[in-house]
Length: 197
Image (tube, rainbow, N blue to C red; front, side, top):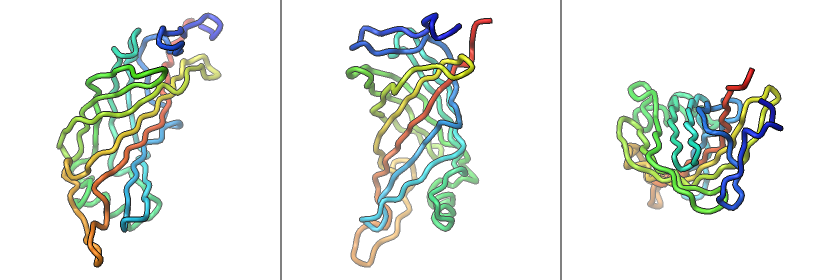
């Protein structure tokens, strides 16, 4: 089916364009799953996970959709080998005993335009807690081979200690070496490879 045959539609919500319902898989070439934390109270440390898989079940109504995400914890990188070793150790992600972290959505609510809230269960180190992301549909299109593509982004801030990421060093001047709050920033594309023959 070509783009001209309109597998996309305009939803009544402020003209939001959404793709046709279906099962979409994460395109690993267009997946940025990042975390941002403060270090030494003033330095921002940004890292990302390089091995991520996800499936988006997109409903006719976007709020009827769901998403499941699996992240390989050993794939984290911050650009500094010593720091990566610490984060992979049992002080933090304990990748040997907890090789995956997961997210499974439990609800989606429309806010305005292309903005949504995405609720779900985040599991790290076998501990599961609810989280809410501020999310958005960032675009709908087709790749050169006719597959539907949808761009999504999501943002939230979590308290790492809830998931057992409790290690911290204490500065000589007081305060934590690594802050409790961690921002999660996700910018991804999903693809539905189904096409008419």
